Length: 397
Image 1 (cartoon, rainbow, N blue to C red):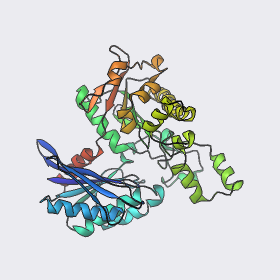
Image 2 (cartoon, rainbow, N blue to C red):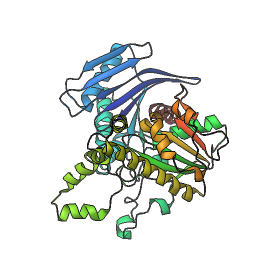
Image 3 (cartoon, rainbow, N blue to C red):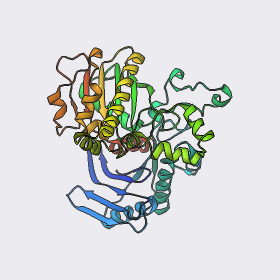
Image 4 (cartoon, rainbow, N blue to C red):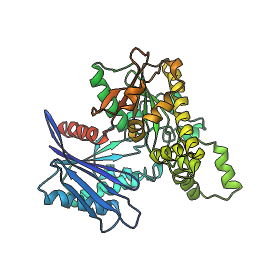
């Protein structure tokens, strides 16, 4: 069974085609289309033979990218048996992967306002696939599903019951597909389930969140009703005082649309540094003496470090810490910055292991004998979705 996985972002589309057999998982094609919303966007595809294809898209949209990708696959004699789609926000109605039908597609439209930057592109890609291949099964995978069983002490907002009683206004959490993958790989490596009783996972990238996992289940996470809550991110503010937002509306004349743009596009490490939200650029600038760049890096690390302590309290201790996501996987300096001062919890990185990036997709970076095991895992949401798609389709009547 060949599964086409589409992972739509607000300005990009990552994709992969997997051949999924009983004892074999082969990546046939992978790539990205980006940047949408610009004057130019490209489709960039790599296959398992080393061929590299890049073409400018006629229009910088998700729909055009999907159409061209499907055409590329047909021209190469590749045909998907099903498609898998990442949807950031499942609301209260979608707590596990589901097979798309007319009713499901209609229900997705009502969720656009909960994740306005992410859900609409996913729906666009789904419709483009269904338009091109109406009989192709499509399975939807929700980033919120991993956190669906969080206890009320973690998901309930301190707002009137009239707002919360229907269950829609609550903390949902995100990055669930990434957490599911990392937890699965950790379980395989450790050889027991759950891998650890008390685990904190850090998905650190342009979008960043953390998750407290007790006996294999999410009990708390930093993102909330939307992916805006929680940590400082590349261009997102993370937590801010709601009173500040009222001040910006009442005293500075901000509209709802202007606030959204400010908090999602103009804040975070970009705003602090005045330069960029990209940790790689900030590292370079900080090394060259930029104090704002160093402050941005330090604030990011401080918020993560502080949350590790909070989650250790929520879990009743800490057995393991895991880093994933673009920053979590690739920035040894950031991992060291985050871990600095956490020795009292038992977190003690081996600087040599931390600084060397092996070929393995999961490896340890903690000092031998330290009370807390420290891991780095490469994110692979696409393969997780391919596996779950096969499972869903194999159980159909």
